[in-house]
Image (cartoon, rainbow, N blue to C red; front, side, top):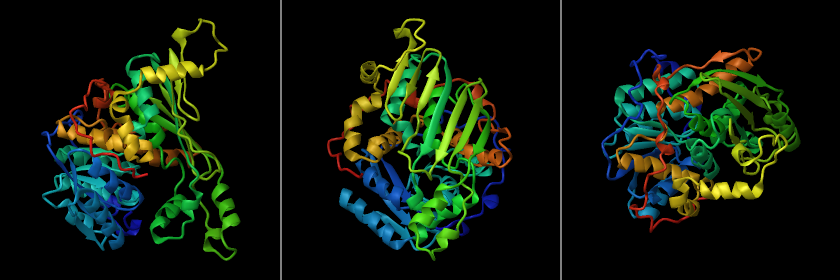
Length: 461
C-alpha cells in the first residue's frame, strides 16, 4: 500500500478535463505492437502487491524488473521474492511516496502494475501512462468521476492501455456465465445482481499505520464504494459499452450499526476507536438502469457477520444463472412451458457447467489453481492480459469499462445522500457504446497450447 491521502497529488490538480478530451472512443479495440517479453514494475507491495510479485514471475513471457513501496522493508521483501523465483534481482524503489515516479521513468519497464491503496491509484496510473507505460490498476481503480475522466483522457492522449485488475471477471463461475450469455442460452439478457458482501470489520479497526486509510475512508463516505467485483462480470455479460451502457442509478443506504457494535465488543474501554462514527452503511443497495432498459442490482455490506458473497446472478428471457451461495442454472427450453413452479436441478446444473466451461478454464484452469491467488482467478487474469499484449490483441477490458464500473463509487454516494434521487451515469465512450462488439474474453477460440507452463505451479495463496 502507498501512503495516506494527504501524501498524493490532489484530485483537482490531476483531473482537469471532465470529459472534454478527444472526441469518439479511440481506445476501443486498441492494439499495440506485439511484445515478446513484458517487463513489469510493481508499485505497492502490500497484500495485493505481495501476491502479484509471487504470481507474475510464473506468467510465461513476463519479467518483474522493478518493485516500489514507500516502506523499505516491504519493497526489499518483494525484491527477494522475485529474486528467489527468477534468479534475477529487480530494481528497488522505496522510502518516499514519490518513488513510483522513478519506477515509471525506467526505460526497461513496459507495464506498471499498480497495487497501491485507493487514494494513490490514479496518480500512479497517470504518471505511468504519461511516461509511456501501459498500466494495470487494482480495484477500485478510481473513486471519483473526475478521476475516471482523467484516466480516460490520458489513455486516449498517450495511446496506452489502462486496465482495471478486476479478478472476479476471471472466476470460473463468472466465465461460465459469460459463455452461456455468448451462446445465447439465457436469451435476451434482462437483469443482473452482484454484490460485495464481506465481513471486513477486523480490517477497519486494525491499528497499523498502513491500514488506517480504509478506516478513514469509511468514516467519510457513504454509498457503494466497492462495486466492481459484482458489477464487472455482469457488465461483461450484458456488453456494457459494447451495444449498451449504464444510463442512471438510484442508491439506498441503511443504518450503520456493525462497525460501532464491533468496536464496543472488541476494543478496550479507553480505545479511541470506540468514539469513531462511520458514514458507511451496513447495507447499501444500488440499482442501475441501462440504455436498453436492463436492470442491475448491487449490494455492499462489509460490516455484518455474514458469509462472503458476490451474488453473481444473470437472467434472460430463456433462463437464469445464479452463482452464490450455490451454482444453479435454469434453461426454460428444457422444461414444459407451464413450469411456473420449476426448481433448479443440481444434476443438470453440473452437466451444463461441464459442457459449457469457458476455454480459459478448460485449458489452464488446473494450472491456475496450483498458482493460486483467489482460487486461481488472479493468475488467469494475469495470463490473459499478458497473452493479449504478447499477441498484439485488445485487452479484455479497457479504460472505458474501468471508468463506467468505478463511477458507481461517487454516484451511489451522491444518490444515497439525496434521498435516493436518480443520478445520471456519464458516457465515458462519448457515444461509441452504440457500436456493438464483443469483449475479447468472449472469443472462445483462443489457444494457449503453445505457451510453456511446465515450470508453473507454486502456490501464492
